[in-house]
Amino acid sequence: MRSAVRLAAGDGFHLDAVTCADDHRGWSAAELGSAHRLVLVRRGLFRRKADGRAAVIDPTMAYLGVPGEEEHFAHPAGGDVCTSVSLTPELWHTLAGEGPPGRPTLYVDARLDLAHRRFLVAARGGDTAFELAESLLSLIATSLAQLTPTPTPASSGSGVTDAPRLGASTTEASVPKTTAPALGPESIEAPALGPRGTEATAGVMPGPRLGTDAAAARTDDAGVGGTGGADTGGRGVAKAYAAKGSASRGGDGPRSGAVIADAAREAIAADHPAAGGLMSLAELLAVSPYQLSRAFTRELGVSLTHYRNRVRVGRALDRLEDGEPSLAGLAADLGFADQAHLTRTIRLHVGHTPTALRRLLAPRTA
Image (cartoon, rainbow, N blue to C red; front, side, top):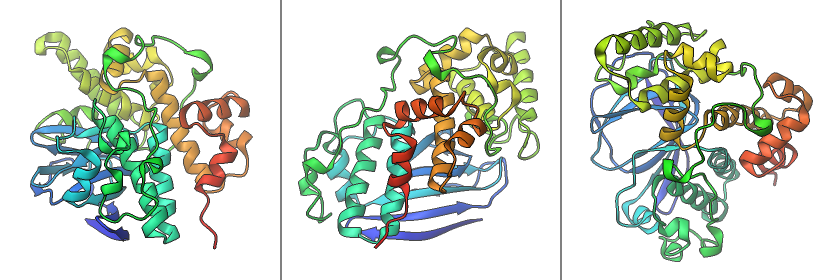
């Protein structure tokens, strides 16, 4: 069952909190997209198939829906909560230009995650014409920088003053330049096969149990390889992928990099014990460590080390947003070496210290 609550609406856009309580591995009936919309996940995990292409959507992967697009959804791990930002065609073309997006999904790095959270804080503040409009521009600009290899009006600052009455503050200066990592193998460093600097802290990341078998997201049957429902221990990932790895070595051909990357993401999200290190994760997925590292970096544009810390930073943001009082306790809970390591990692990913993030994410006061 899906429900939506309108959080805010402005000239050319509206914002909804969408909650899905479904628990099914099979694909839903076809739905037709009715607007340009950016969908970001707050909690949970689901699968989406559009125009025959499937993807695993979670807090680290958003998607862009376009009018007339045929979509199917599957919820093999239970429910989820998403933010859906819908734009009119006029506002979309003003911000994104006339060309189609580079791809339907986008990696949500920690800076985009923060822009999403601040957008929701602005929505609760009630200043739709100014604060929410500026937060919308920041969110869309950061997202488009991930989606398209060439500058867009929003990411370059051009054309923003022509947007349909978003408020007097929506000028070029209100659209920040983004430093999000490039999503192509040509513009990233070589795949990391081991720890990188101080980020490589071993250990399993505490957090919500989000996933089961990601390989199904690349098949016509959304439930293929599943475990019969949400697997809170992540053991279903091990069984399904070990079986698929054995099959591929037996002559079915190697799995694609996208399938391997999705499997790794779901194992990390599910806190499977093997997700605490590259070697054990590769063994879990029945691939070589080099194959896993290279496939992951090629598909997401960041190394496994960086991604693992991105997930931990997201969990830290959840706690800070809820008013977590102890940074030392937060560091210990999330597997960091100490509070200084937590602070360095968060600042590297988000550009702010934990103390500053508490202020940025705090509810607005009159």
